Length: 495
Image (cartoon, rainbow, N blue to C red; front, side):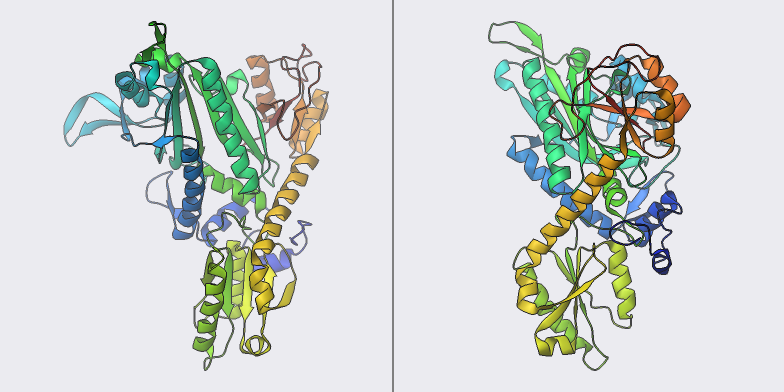
């Protein structure tokens, strides 16, 4: 595939050892994850080992989000991985939603536990238990908490970063005195996720509310950001939930109001997980491998010294000098010091890993005061004055970010179709598109659509969402009953 996504260049792509996207998107994804050194299989069924390059990417994600959470007044804490089984069963919808996915611990050594533990699928229950002891008065509110860690959910069909039995995330949990404040928190976090995806990851996402049948187990309302991958499938990339007083009542999280009355707190939860790495791969990658969004890339610029055996060490030192000049701008730079490896191999390797900018530096370039620069989203190399290459690097990286966002946005719009008949709906879904259609809101009707097409409701876009927010009236695309939402609902096949 050429960098404009035209689908040409399969012969060149095969030299990288990556199946072209158009041949088999699933194989392409799995190969990129492994060959770009993001993750590998583990001896634990359904779990992955994240390799240093993938871990560095996750660390950058954590760093940006953690700073953003703290800037909005949230405090981090740490809860146990094990949760008493009785906690899970206290909230009826919650246990029903998670029961098939639970890992349980029933023994310690040879001793059988009187009450099993579950490895946390999420932490609303244990947090509610602790809050019940911490919360006394309205003066204690709001509680604005979050934690980073792993969660565990049994997966039958696993896929690195997207669906694994153990995955990594933050989970935010907040408690408030009233519903308006709690709902404002839910929206604030959804908008932070949107900002992160758009401005850092170059991912266009649709903000909206989930239908009742797609809500988080135990929630009053669930909101999501939905991204479109380059095979047309949807990836739920983050969620924010208004839990009402459901968990507060289950765990006795109540407080004394200003009027000396006792009330249950209104709670929220919200999360982005390591599956966002899958979104980066599948939204921006091409037939040659990854294209890392520059603002989150573990390595933004790779410097490749080009020399013979008798001068290679000297060129490496020159590369380090150039890298230091770029690092002084706050950029993440690596010098490829590998000896005994061809330049072509190095170029292909960094192309596969998706490093946004490659600089080639040879003896003749050094004499002339120039460097050769190649951006990952372009087929062309540029010969630039060294000083100009350094001073213009930040702007170059911003340009790559803008290019990625524009390309992904165009793809999203071109592959999201308005339909009003069920025949057109089925045809559009089968062709790998998202569909915008009116729907009656009935869960049985949703299920019928899913059974027919494997498409689910992604969300109902918010009125001020960046994409597809316009209101309208119509009849259900499946059953012909009046629309329940006053606008079209997004349907698509999902990861």
